Image (tube, rainbow, N blue to C red; front, side, top):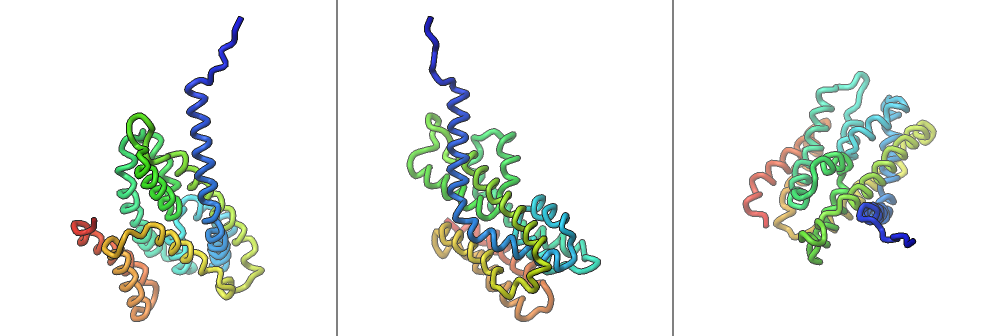
Amino acid sequence: MTVDLQTSPGATQRDDWRDEFRRGVAACLPILLGVVPGAMVLGALATQKGLRLGEVPLMTGLNFAGGSEFAAIQLWTSPPHVALIAFITFLVNSRHLLMGAALAPYLQHLPKRKVFPALFLMCDESWALGLADARRRAAQGIGTTHNGPAFSLPYFVGTGACIWLAWVGFTSLGAAVGPLLGDVEAYGFNLAFPAVFLVLLRGMWTGFRAARPWLVALVVAALAYLLVPGAWYVAAGALSGLAAAWFLAGNIR
């Protein structure tokens, strides 16, 4: 009697999924060098603003968008202005509409029942890594019907899950040790978050024309920060960037 030792198609697919997931985790490990200090700072700032230890992982785990969380903490008062914080969070996170639109051409052939849950893990870092990987794979000829899609969903899930776990875990740790550190911004750790963003932006740079909405948002936010009291620079930068992207969409190639 002979035994068929051939690997089943299902087992091969599971192996491929695990390999791509691990590749995503490995790709995002260098990013964690900037994510971890930023998470610690956010957690420490949150408790110093009055949030309870258990509330910090709820905020960072359910929202999972560092820019809006930093903006919310800067606006936090006791009692908090919930409507203002919700509005600013919506404005800052509205960039995800453009990020999702950039991924859309690579997702149209994938099953929505898998894509939509995976998009919960979309943050600036996982989006940039996933899009850059899809473009690289497409340039290599991957994406035809016989060799799978250019966008690797398990790779994207690997990057997002790794960053999500690190973000929630280290914001919680920062919240726990924050009261012992005093003014955490004095250590300069808050520069880690914009540093990671600049590195990702450099990797996504395709020319000045495509970057014009970003530059408009930067200039408007800087002017509002210098000239207008309060945190209106956040709303000014977000709205001006969205408006510039809409007006210039027909000219960006």
